[in-house]
Structures are given as structure tokens and as C-alpha cells.
Image (cartoon, rainbow, N blue to C red):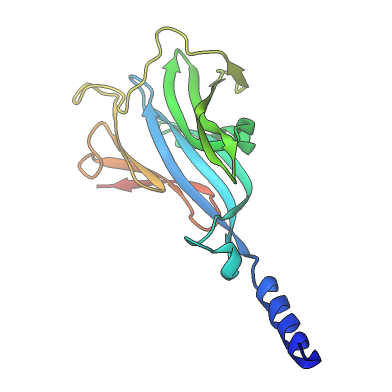
Length: 215
């Protein structure tokens, strides 16, 4: 092979490989679920927070667009008290509790003033994918004093409900979940109650916000 041909081939190969990397880091967030506390204007929200980079170049995107690189992955639990007009980050589990293949975080409900939530996923790795024979499940509780503790299982008497009571029997909430928000109708359905609260995640930063709407 002539020298100039080898040189041009090497240049093309270097350009091809160097183009196969990852783009800038971006935030990806979503609301997984929300649960109201019985007989109150309090609800909890489970959210999934990631910092990801999208693959670029022919190698990284072959054959189906490639797999994003995840540099941070957290399960976040927020507790919202509408009577006090407060919102707090009650739990923040980094690296998904070291579950190899994270799938979902889920608010289960309350026992008294203690909140329970679960992280779900599988064993496996990025090359082989999910190992469906190795399901993973980590149960946590948030105590009334704000401590986050891993526990073996849910206790008896767990109250898991989307809404916090019967219509017309105040105080109660009606919750409606979107991809990055939860609308809470106070003593009525969202949009029909005299007042609605909106929990939302800012898509570009993942910052949580609480706003109120008078209908």
C-alpha cells in the first residue's frame, strides 16, 4: 500500500474513532408515583434523577442509537405538606442503593408518621443487560425524625393509597401524576377544587418546585 494511502487511511480512522464518544451531560428526571397520607393534606412523591450523556459517532450509536452514559443516578423522595405550604427532600439514595440495573423507585405508604418506599431493579451489567433471574428490592423508611433507614420488609398496617380520603370528607387530597409533576386537588379533584397545588420538577435541573393555583 502506498505511503500516502496508508496516511490517509490512518487519518480517516483517527477521525472516525475520535468522533465516537459522548455528548454533553444533561439532566433526566421523572416522577414515578405519589401517595397521600390518610386524612391529611400531606403527600409523598418518588422521583428518578439522572445525569446522562448521549452517545455520538458510528460505533457508540450502532446498531440502535447506543446506550447513554449515566454519571449520576439518584432516587429522591419528597414530602409535601400543603397546610404548611412546605416541601422537603426527605430521602436521597445515591447510586440506586448499588442495584446494578435500576428500574423504579416507589412510595409505598405510611404507618403512623413513618413513610416507606422501595427501590426496584435487577442484577446484570451494561453488556449483558438485566438479569431477570436476579431481581433486587430495597425497602427504606423515613422516620418522623427525618432519619432514612433500610429495613427488611414493610410492617403490617401499611396505608398505601393514591388519595387521602373520601370525597366530601375533608381533609382529603386527589392526586393526578404527570411525567414531571403531580397536581393535588385540596378537598376536591385537581382543576375542580377551589385550590390546587402543583409539585413539579424543572426538566433541565431536576429542581423541585411547589406552586398553588386558585380555581
